[in-house]
Length: 249
Image (cartoon, rainbow, N blue to C red; front, side):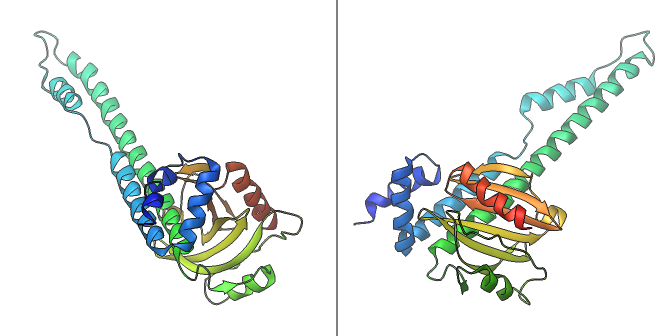
């Protein structure tokens, strides 16, 4: 089939292993082929699930054996309470270390889940026959369209003199939280800008740049809102659009 050659490059595309020119060709094909776009989305979701599962903390058998050995250790004759003075603080440090490790692992998994959902929303929108519900390059048309559809308002930047073009927007959801998804274009690449109310753990992710599979991601909070910028362009391009949004905020 004609799409077999494209499908053979999907995993490399999603992993960010293709040269920029080849990645651009695959991106163009995905926008015009619903079958390959759906296949790419399935593969992306599988990669997300594997990545999250791989980050879960599982103590090794050696670690468990070491803890049991320390707990079962008997005090030497004549030492009285002395062994407790040594073992109890050591066990306390051990327990705290495990608790901190588990918290870090859960926090990392939660952040990864947020980025995974955003990447899925980005791919799903681009694979859709109608990526946006309001089609316009005019920010004064797109911004008012969201009034009454989401429980907050936001500002959009002036793009005149930049390489970015606003294509439109749609209502989307993250962790059942409604928000705005705006689609921008840069040199035939689409970039999604997600805006949600900042609701702590429901929309939280560590601020700053991040690489999520084949996408670069930038996020920050401003005026009670959480912004995410997701796209398969360079980190510098993501930062340039992010700066325009922050300045307009």
